[in-house]
Image 1: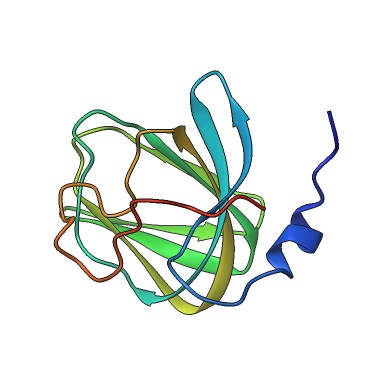
Image 2 (image 1 turned 120 degrees about the horizontal axis):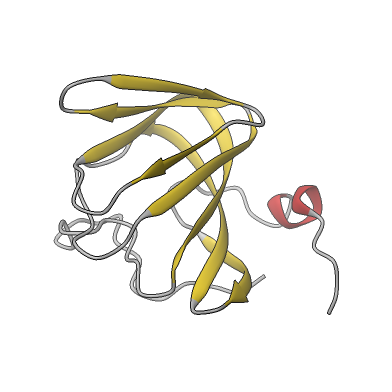
Length: 120
């Protein structure tokens, strides 16, 4: 039962689109990631995802709209909804999602797919 300092955990890595697990509860993972540039269009058949901006800003693109997210704001992407995060500058994000969630969802043929994640 140790506390987690998000700034300290984020200082441990600098790469983009490579989430790290910083907590687990009830079959869910709390992850930290840094985004820069566009990700791949994808969706998750079974999992909802929560994106909370810790530092910076990014936009979540959907096929019919775009949502801008800034520090302290979060967005929940429901399962089955195609989306693509895009960060014009580096952004730090906390993700909360089921442990089964693969970052590229239905697009696991991508070089950004991470099937196993590091724990910090």
